[in-house]
Image 1 (cartoon, one colour):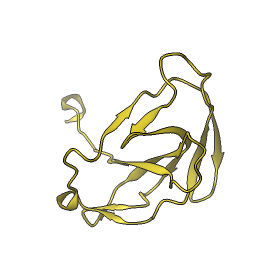
Image 2 (cartoon, helix red, strand yellow):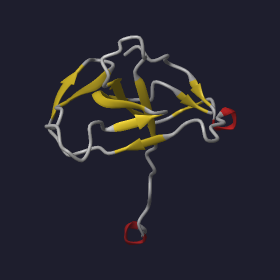
Image 3 (cartoon, helix red, strand yellow):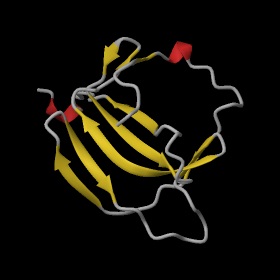
Length: 122
């Protein structure tokens, strides 16, 4: 992964008004899972081309497809200075074949919430 990592993702610093156009159209597909010691890597099988879409993600007028998916435990990044329980990172490569465009990484923090159901209390 050539995305800059790890970093602190601070929501107060994000300003994306009308300049960060992001849309997605992920499809069901198979994955191949491998243990990379620091994370689980999921190689994403590319779905066959369809007439409805040529890319899975469009970001700032550039088309991207999923390259791989990684699951880190605990998170690779921090969010507002706090590490998440886990983090899913979806790594996308541009579809145009232009290697000078860096990958697009979509980082999703995962928090585990412990709950107590009313029936488990004595």
